Length: 480
Image (cartoon, rainbow, N blue to C red; front, top):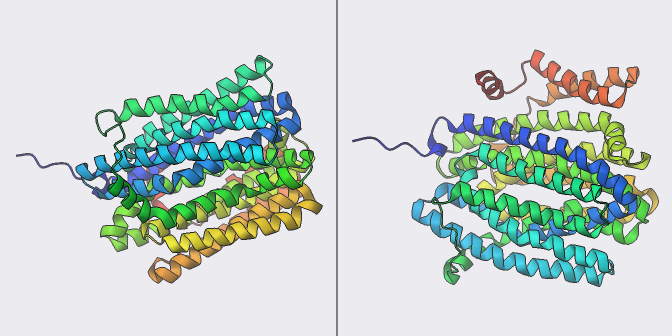
């Protein structure tokens, strides 16, 4: 009689698969960003700075609605899928699909109504309606890809995401070459989402039920459990993007466009922290249920990795902002805004790490209160800084809010579980690495693109000499 293979999340392979899967996802994401560099300059130059700002405004609005209608079910669904048996997993997928479909249809209607109510004009209202179709497609694709994440099949997750990006870039290039006006560009997210949905269905067909079955009592039980986290998620989606929406209402069109260029770059890059940490979330969820020492160890290593990766990205954006804005076809005000927003990426890594830690422990109330405070702070700083400082003021508001949220999450985690306090051993080497990376480059004043490459390399070099890079990461790289 053969012994059944252990669940991958309980096996010794889980950590290695998580590190390599996270690396693959990040590499795929970076490849997608590089592909976007093909379309973004074309889009900025084709539409002009004002229409590009309008495009970013509507896509940000749809993104906000997507987050609001998620109801926290994507993350909670992944946690539940990671701890349930086969029967429970099938029921979970049916409930996820049913609830998400209902919520996204309502959200799409609200998005269109909002764009009309604030006077965006006929083109932008119709564009909102077209882009909102992607909400339904994304809801289905996210639910169907839950097994891929939970079973650490992150290579296939990367393939789907990268294909979506390729489709997005190809569609934008085609529309630019065709001389299209603003409206057709709003169909791009919907068509790309349709392609990603088809691929996900092929990958999980036969593993999970694809047709929704609305079991009201069971679905309500799932929603009721996640309501505090859903509220926290909704606010979290809003606070990070509230500045671009408010700027469209209180700032001149050109300042909104300048901030839109910088914000678009960082918005894309901010996906990397969440990709990396979410790769570890199934392991964290299982460890929170079964093995506290494993959870403590995993969070400590994630904190070290977050500091290292966050500083690397902050340095790259700080020194490379001028080059990035030049490639995109932006103007000087976007450079200073992007440099400030680059610092926010360090905080985003910590936000992602501690958010998933709190979620693993079902600390929904802490997430909700922290996100609500961040939203209030973000709105207040936007009204205080944007009228006098325009795009730079909005960038400062975003960065300050993200840093404050990281502090609140970390404090909430330590108060709930003092044994999960982050190890601070990485801070000394990281500080020294920053000094070594920054001071020479400021003195030499090299081209922006050269500095953007050298600064992270110098920083990592210092950490390597001091042996401050996590051993798991080194071993995973060597093993590969």
